[in-house]
Length: 73
Image 1 (cartoon, rainbow, N blue to C red):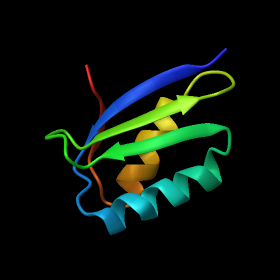
Image 2 (tube, rainbow, N blue to C red):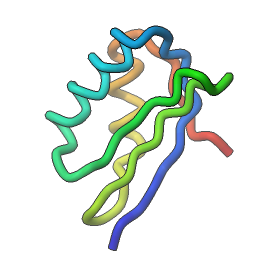
Image 3 (cartoon, rainbow, N blue to C red):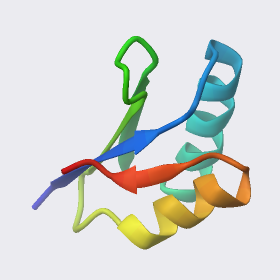
Image 4 (cartoon, rainbow, N blue to C red):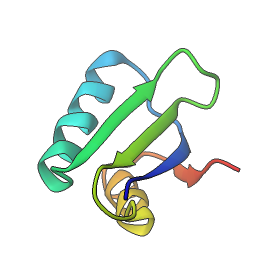
């Protein structure tokens, strides 16, 4: 069973997005991760191919790297 979580962030610039996606791919290997820099909410989309997305861990990872991250409602 897969799950998807969508986050509002303040990630700006392709370099930052690629850096974060690389970091997240290493930590969450069975996930599909993307950041939409064109969206006003700089949407981070995380899809877990197996099990639930570890939402608190995703938020913590971005905050540790000085980015804002919250679940988009």
